[in-house]
Amino acid sequence: MAEQKQIALGQAAAYQLANVAKTAPQYGALTPKWLAKFLEFKGLESGIYRVNTVVEGETPLDVLCSQDPKKVVIPQGFIQYETKPREYKLNSISTIVNVDTKIQDVYSAPYDQTQEQIALAVESLRERQESQIINNDDYGLLKNAADTQRVQARYGRPMPDDLDELLSKVWKEPSFFLAHPRAIAAFERECTRRGVPPVTVNIAGGNFIAWRGVPIIPTDKLLVDGLKNPKAKTGKTNILLLRTGESKRGVVGLYQSGLQNEHSRGLSVRSRGIDDNGIASYLLSLYCSAAILAPDALAVLEDVEVGDYYDYTQNPV
Image 1 (tube, rainbow, N blue to C red):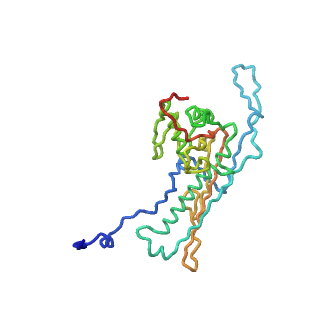
Image 2: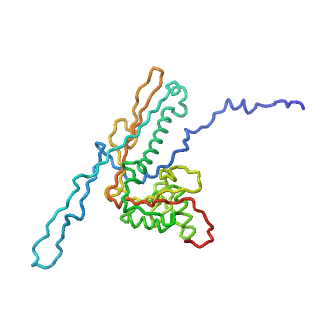
Image 3: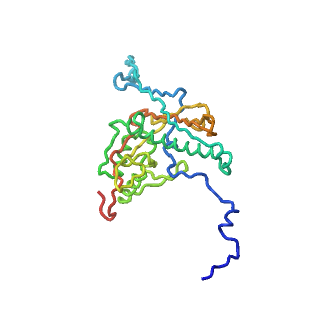
């Protein structure tokens, strides 16, 4: 068969003259980090946050409430403070970004190579910050929840009754539930099975389901069997309920304010100079922690099974 003669410019050659539309670098591991957006944060001056608490029940203060004019003795007492309150020290999360200045000089249109490298590194640090707030062995929410605020899932899978139990633990102005996306899906299946689908609310630019008016916020930092993205169909995780804010004696995120070379809240970006090979180096440091101001500001639903599927035509348990 004779070769077909080319009578017009081909695609491969034309491609060489085309302006190719391109995106900034896409990093699939990044998440919306809703926890950082919903949690109230407090800036610190010296990296230490002391939670002063009152010793309740030992020196009660009686109150006079009587219309009897003969009762003239006013009760006396005082409020005792804890003499050794807990202090939270900021945790440092750091990384170093290296950029070849030749690459920066030649290949920075339309996107600045240095800024893109730093932006992705910042997002990675923020991901780590969210994970530490939940899982850190010192100040993490899972580690510091009071024993009286821990609830076992009744049947493994997350049921409306279980979330109601959490609400009974954090009944003073609860702010939001926090759960892995698969735990949220499991809860939605239970609600669907019972014919009580949760409503959807729009908060801070995101759509979330809510239970009893309290939004359920997704995060993959509440691990399933120790993993952010489990491959198995089954697995166990935890669901949290928080009250947030210093004025509400809730959970508070902590950060260092007034940093030199501050890039964003609690995070600094410092140039480390350029070496003899033309490699520019940048140090990124993030200072963070979290504090639970009162035991009833946090409750945990433990051992939540995310992999139960069944015939929806059967009667619910």
